[in-house]
Image (cartoon, rainbow, N blue to C red; front, side):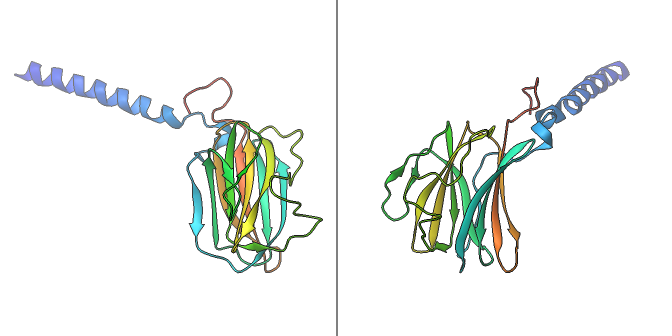
Length: 187
């Protein structure tokens, strides 16, 4: 009886040890420590401000898109879509890249020749970016403004709002250059 109990305890110990040692490997090698994922992100509210600028930057581990708003941004969403469509009409907006993010700020915009030059037009030159392929204007209709962000492939991203400058805010979208640290596939 005692021998049988010791055998079962040994088996359970091996099973437990094996699961403890292997469980963390699923998140053991994320690229630059990023654990962002690729599911939709956002806040469903509406905002009172106006979009004033769209800009982008390159970082060591990700490319960044920023939408500047002149008041606090309380309504926004960012998600992967098959096609980016124009606000109001539903017309498909061409966006270069292997995958497309639909970036929506629930604010209006005052169109000017210097900034918004028509649907599908490039807002930011992405030449030399590791992840970004295109930043295209998709329109603004009834207080909802959309930008199409073309990326190399479906990659992890994060999206959040920062306060400032002044009374304004910024919708920030960071897209990682890759999923895993080089040489690893278990991230």
